[in-house]
Image (cartoon, rainbow, N blue to C red; front, side):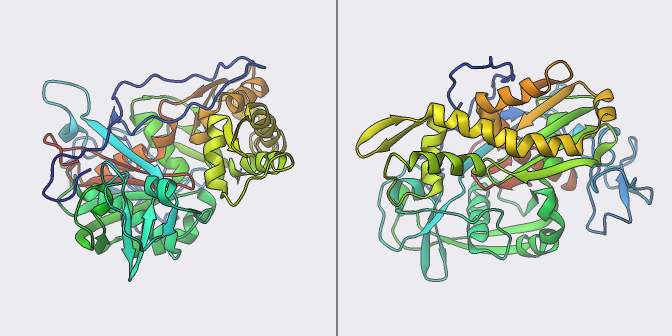
Length: 454
């Protein structure tokens, strides 16, 4: 990512060829967290799904007519009480944008690209000069007269970076992370943005209206370019969000699984193993079956278990749970200037988390008849990167479900949001943006320009 007027600094982009990670980890095998690579470009099909309107979801659904002009969307009042608002029509004919997004001479859809940074902030008013290679790794944004280092820069230069769990648009950390995402996107998208983002289903209704109000309109973002080689002081960027849609996070995952590189068809269970929230449901061609949707505590539960066990033997100092989470992912931490292997502690914590938290909620939410409808369970989110946790799912559902981790599980929700935004934008790739403000990482996904500005 460069400062304005400088094309020499670019963030690294993930390879568009990513291997799918299946959940066939052998039981009892010592395994390490599969750390996410740098943000990637992925090829996606567009979602065969109609946009959820800004009208109450209980009143209308949207159906796309296959041979109608792009602007024609038929409204009907036949929302099934058995599906999640906004998920109906997932098996419909191709929507707005499918034809426009195809590469000439090909049936493929042009590649999307995702960028991610840790969802942490810390106030910092001291000068930082040439400490990061690009904007992605050197985010410093001002709120009033106070500067805040964000993401990678907060990890490297901060003392105690943090973030509230499941924060809302009323919270400072949410607003700063949102502005950071918009600032990054504005280096690629020069036109008014069409944005889709989301929340866990449990907080979606409570936050939807406020999020729309926050995002829609003009944002004057003041930031510091000095950390990545620019001038010290205040740079300013105006970012306009012309239209915005808020959907449940699990729906974003489902859209990406069906119409992204996964190309999943038919019925399947899907589970999103996030840091703050675990969500799971049954997805069908007609939509998400709301009765099967369940949520509970996320990976933070396991991280907290590990912190408490390790603190019995080692002094952890003043590090925050987010700083500890890095060691949890790697299976290694530094304590008292010693390297400490915590892979076994991590394994026990993840297994206990699954046994005490995840398994009971799934048993209560999914009936025997639900297993007649599919034989597949997809895993997404950061938890899908832990083979020990994937193995717990495999063991419980052995003989009835095939358990698979999706490719690039950390960006799945954001990719689904971007596909949804593409439809909302009438197929205009130059304005579509997906933004996932997660408890662990914030991810933006967009369709890059041919001549890149990042």
